[in-house]
Image 1 (cartoon, rainbow, N blue to C red):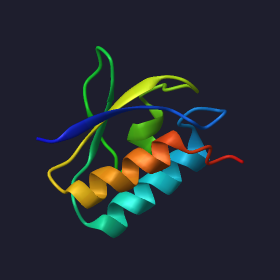
Image 2 (image 1 turned 90 degrees about the horizontal axis):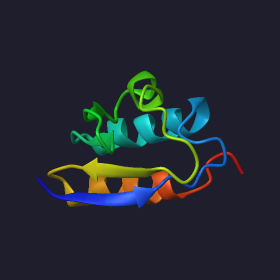
Image 3 (image 1 turned 180 degrees about the vertical axis):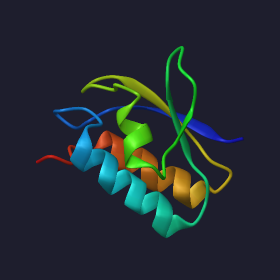
Image 4 (image 1 turned 30 degrees about the vertical axis):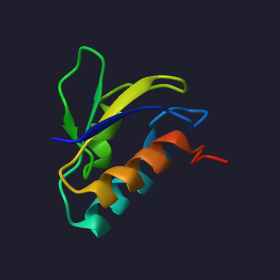
Length: 85
């Protein structure tokens, strides 16, 4: 499955607002996407709650994985953005 590593750009990490934005984008894309931190199990990026369980803070590298390249690219851009700005 295609994957990309990306650094979390949100100043507060993947907390409530960034997680909700990412989960909504995954739902809109209609394709499964997972997020994972080093040494952790992948979680469904369509769930804000599961995204928050990653504990990914600003600067944490996250692996984004999806069979759908457009969905993958969208989530990579969102994870890299400061969604709290």
